[in-house]
Structures are given as C-alpha cells and as structure tokens.
Length: 333
Image (cartoon, rainbow, N blue to C red; front, side, top):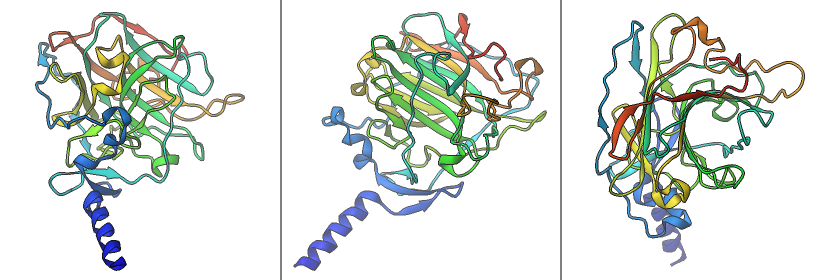
C-alpha cells in the first residue's frame, strides 16, 4: 500500500510539472500545466479564472515611415511543450530587485530615460526596443537593461505599482552574456514582486515562449539592427494587463494584483538602466546599450523608437510630450 501511495504521488507530480525540455537557446525548462502555474498561488488570485486570450487588441491609429537603417524583429526563445502546458525556465537562484526613490537619489542605479508628461490616464504602451549584447563589468553582480515602465503611485506614499518589460544582460544570474527577455512587476514599491515567473502573479498563456530566454539575433555595430516590439495594454472588458512581443501574445498580469494600477497607469517611461556596484572610485565598465553617446546615431547607439500609449478608447497614439530623465546629463545611450 505504501508503495502504491508513493507511486501515485510521484505520478501526480509528473502530471503537474510535465517533462523537462531544452529551449532553443539551451536552457532547461519545465512544461507546467497552465492551470497549475505558480501565478495561481498568489493570495489575491484564489478565485481567478484563467483568461485564455485578450477580449480585444488596441486599435492602431498611427503609421510610421521606414527608416534608412536595416531593422528586423528579433526572435524569442521557445520550447516545444505539450498542449495545455507552458515552458518555465529553471533558474539557479531567485533574481531580486530593489529600486531607488528616484533616478538620482540612490547610488547603484543609473538611468537614461524619457517619461510621459501627459495624458494623466494611460491604458497601455508600445515601443520598439533596440537589442544589444551590452558588456557587463567582468566578475560583477551588475546588469544592463533596456525597457518600458508603466507606473502609478508615489514613493513618498509608499504605494508604487509598476509593470516592466524589456531585455537585460545579467551574466551573474543567467551565466552568459546574452540579452534576455524579462518582465517584472511590483504592487508595493519594490518590497515584493519579481522577474519572469519566479513568484506568483503573472499568468502565462503562451505554450512556447520562454520568459528569461535569449533574444536573437543581436544588433551589429554599424550594421543590421535587431528590435523587439513590446505592447502592454489593459483589457477593456476584463481589466487585466496583457503583454505581447511582436505578434506573439505572452500572457497577462491579473487586475487583482494591483490597487493603484487597477484602473490605469499615470506614467510611462522608456529607456535604459545599469547597476553600478563601484559606488566610489572608478566608474563601472558596464554599458548601457552600446556604451556610446546618443549623438553618434543609429547603428552605433541603442535606441527605443515608435513610442506610443493606449488611450481610454483602446486606441494606440503616438506620444508627443516627453520629459528626459537621465541620471547624468551625459549618460550613455
């Protein structure tokens, strides 16, 4: 009888986790039943019913001229998981994050970004993020990031809610120098929340995309430029915050996770970030983007283009009113 019980428990575990796979970039992933993914362990999602797909997509209202530079949509890492399961990358450690009160107030974080000044109610954001394999200080626990932030709340009232999407190069965590797709969220000013699928919260619906997986190809200096097209928007009917990369829908942050972001975001920021562990003496060699200044132009510096927001009618509109917020006026681009 004891033997049968052990076998039953083992088989139940196998059914829950699925079988291990190797992703396109060589990571080991587990194929997890989408109804049993870690997201549903969050105390606010006890009664949440999985939304299989967004009720509608934002309406495109703008068109953009093709630039003279060769650009292409980058490919995301995938795994061949059975139907009804999602790929979850095996991480060797938990990746945590602390955030300074502002881009200039705390040593260790440096930024070059632009922020929306209006409108005051934002229901999503979209942009094309240029992807580079930024160099990171050898032997350091530093990283380089290009991303979008959707934020509401204030540090002084300790109620910051944020959704963040982009790419990061973080050798100490990922054990390589590849740019990798990441997501992050918090509903309590960075006291909790997490990257990718490391904690309950984000619900993945894609059965193939690996969050935390490598992005390929990367941009080449003076040559072809690689981009990811990031779109996050609030479902007009369900209220959940959906994420797509290019034409691929990845999943969503349930509305129940947030208080301040429960209705809308008040700010969208686009830009780069590095961590600098050398807070005295010489500056870190970790690059933001390519590590070069913006006046050198496309093909030599990293960029984010075609920045848009989603309005209350679920229309995508270009952003006209932006405020530049670098840590340093001469910050790298």
